[in-house]
Length: 195
Image 1 (cartoon, rainbow, N blue to C red):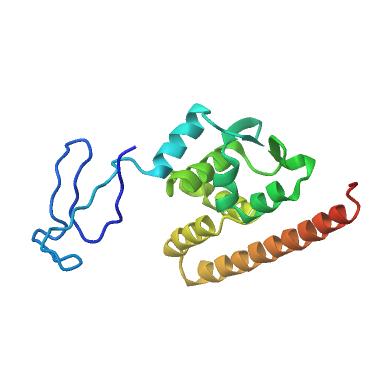
Image 2 (image 1 turned 90 degrees about the vertical axis):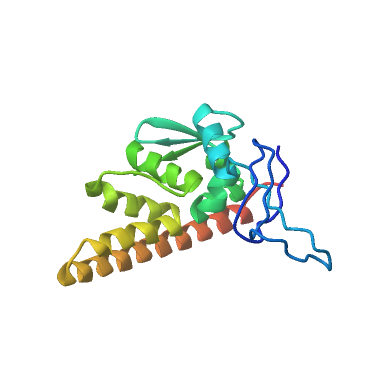
């Protein structure tokens, strides 16, 4: 793996080319020296590598079943992105073992959600955005919920905007209801778990 150094200013040095350039185009004193700052960049991001691993099934440790399809993934990436899945994986329940079934999420919607989680972007037909919003709310992927709502808000007039706010309120109620039911269920199971 190429060495990394936090970027201090614009400009970069490509590890592949082996060249280095001053960060600001001129020498900047660092700790009293007149040496230029050098930024070393890894051309591929961690997210891109994890996404490639997921698509190849490399080092995956959980399979999500949605809409009749199986999606190998990394438990830690899903838990970092989804409060629902983080709670499920941490619960120790049988559902958190190796296969997790999502009954109400179509395969194409979950595929787009996974792309967003791993890569920070996803492509989906516009009419499917409400379905993606529901899945993001159900799995508690807040950045995706916000992104979908922003797109939908930009496409609607004032009357539809009020409807969208109502939908957003309902999604929040649904999410809160799932949180409450899940935490009560997990607490109840922990009380009755054999030692």
